[in-house]
Length: 129
Ligand code: C2G
Image (cartoon, rainbow, N blue to C red; front, side, top):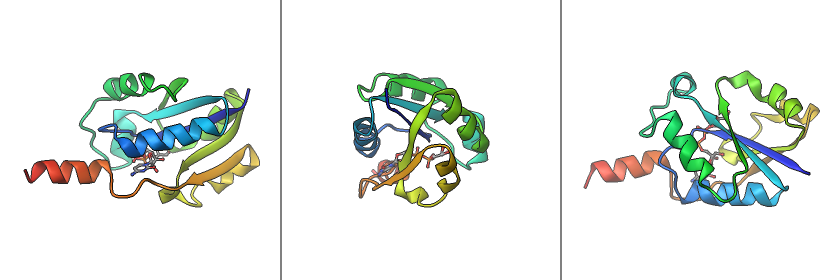
């Protein structure tokens, strides 16, 4: 089977996440998602509305996601790629180029982000209602 992996916070699960996961799944036949822990979110300078456990539960409910693992640090990707026999690492193109070093271990793809939606934008618009 062709394993695809991606990582992210996936807070306030929205259409941009859904469309990305749908495209990621279409690249192979098994999609693994590394969900950023609350502690790693702090490292990334992000504060999630939903806790790690809630974000995991939401992703597990997504039809495109086959397995969910924890993302606890920047440097677990190579280990994960080997452990899960990953063929493709893919992520939104806001990360363009950042993970090219993984091409020694698997294919690396950057997929177009969905326009006009982001967790930050949702929070901003809701706070102004
Ligand atoms: N995304 C998207 N379109 C949007 C918003 C997000 O395609 N409108 C994608 C992002 O490009 C990313 C994924 O959805 O691939 C998850 O987004 P975030 O939770 O913001 O991910 P991020 O915090 O960038 O975490 O080690 C990698 C990091 O953990 C990535």
